[in-house]
Image 1: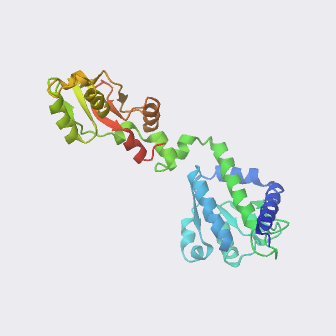
Image 2: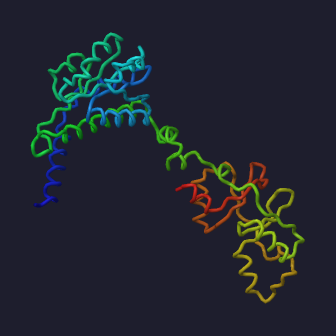
Image 3: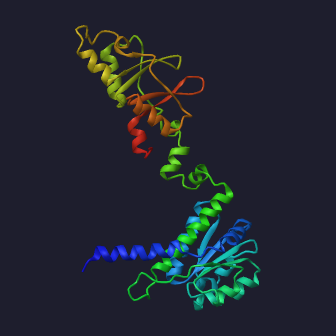
Length: 314
């Protein structure tokens, strides 16, 4: 049995249904959802309910307040979650799902707009609806033409189409998306600053310290660097690399001043710079650690490239 061929046929069948979908109701659906002062509440049973949960999650994360309720739970108290300022997106391929049909009169009693996603324009659900998003398919990918396959794919895709249309309508930006996903990679990229990750406790050497004294302080500091400050301003920095280079010099002497082996006026970074930009700057300049300064150029911390990577900054 050629499973690769079967899989390809399934994808082809479902792709054809997507390409030939009837989206004539999308404009009115977008208008209803956009003008809803409250939430767009999604409901459905079985596989339609599972798809509905994902649609509600997509809507909520892209600027349209939304959540999913199960019709059975709605009949036992959750109808109270639907307010007069809300609208409802009800999903049923047949349009006759018993649990869903039972709550329709109550939804209409609240006088809230109803968007239907159904494969039958003559169904009970369609008759109750203010607008129908047609999810009818000519053929399920199931070889028996019974199991919801093409129809659930189309339902999910139409839900995505509605969400994207609303994003366009609201001029929803990357920054808006990140604000709903502060813990995601995009949120970290757009919101986390250097000051949120910097290490405020760092070793400092006096300019008269010997190299031996500086090495001891550097070891205790455990960041592989030590800073030389002048009234909180950065004067120099001694790194492991500087130390290795010093040891290769004929002039190497542990009793000499450490600052003589340090890098004078090193690069710094402002605490309000985005962490993602700091990572890019450090990678481009092959720097492992940077002193962090405030707007008055006072050193307030240090940031190591490993801190950025471990925090998931990309």
